[in-house]
View 1: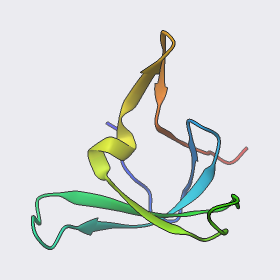
View 2: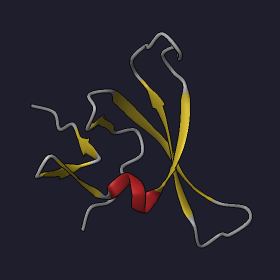
View 3: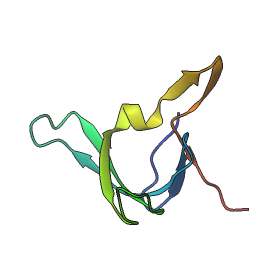
View 4: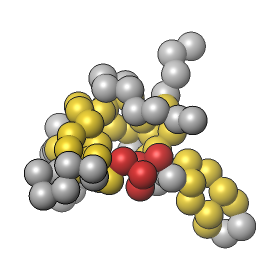
Amino acid sequence: KREIKVGQKYKHFKGGIHEVVAVALDCEDPKRELVVYKSLYETPEYPIGTVWTREKNNFLEEITRDGKTFLRFEEIRPI
């Protein structure tokens, strides 16, 4: 089973690199876990360090596009 590692870097399936800041509980529903992460790249709309949240299950899920299945966020492991 995959687990979120705070401080770890992850690559989004579209190519962006992010660092997990925390796993938080939703104040309206404490059983709902959210991943708090920040971007380590810049886009025309958002600067480096923009902070995002996403449901933990969504962060960890597999995506299928064009017949290929892959992770939404894949841990970047040191070489």
